[in-house]
Length: 242
Image (tube, rainbow, N blue to C red; front, side, top):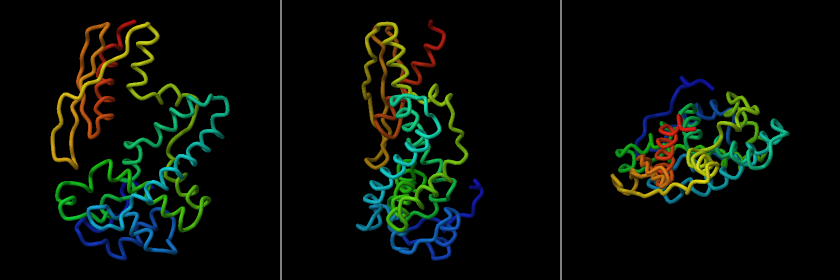
């Protein structure tokens, strides 16, 4: 996939043109037998009651199976816990968001006027969900083997090896293990404020390490993302502590 792939029509409350949908199908390497599934996969709930959320649910399960199989085959000596962490890293929102951008999904979404004006087409959560919905739509239209082939092309630039297990831990997990190894109490996370409208809130979180009397702050578009950002700030501060 090229990062400079042609894009669909610009976002508006109007659906993408047939030409745009043909171009998208060329980029993913699959032509739908049921075009309505593709259209639904690109439809946000702000646009229509026939939106992508059920397809997203299905696509989430499909991509987890595909990535699990990929890791199981490629890393035969890793235990379940490490495989799970690597899988979580590969299918997290940031990763799916990046893949969606490469496919040009940000310009193919059908959004309600308010959502479009508020920047919904660039919102990582919406793009990640739409990507999963797209895979769910392929699964319904063509079955598992085809959806597996397509998902593997999305992941083809990722080199799977033993070293991935060393970087697969999210910041909260890494901080927890750092503290437990030193028999210290776990960090305490507190939401200290939220900013923005309900559909685009930013959560500001404080991470406090009692035994060190250290506090750092982070932010994200979900509480969990804010906690991870704050934990990362603590880890950066602790990097020279032995």
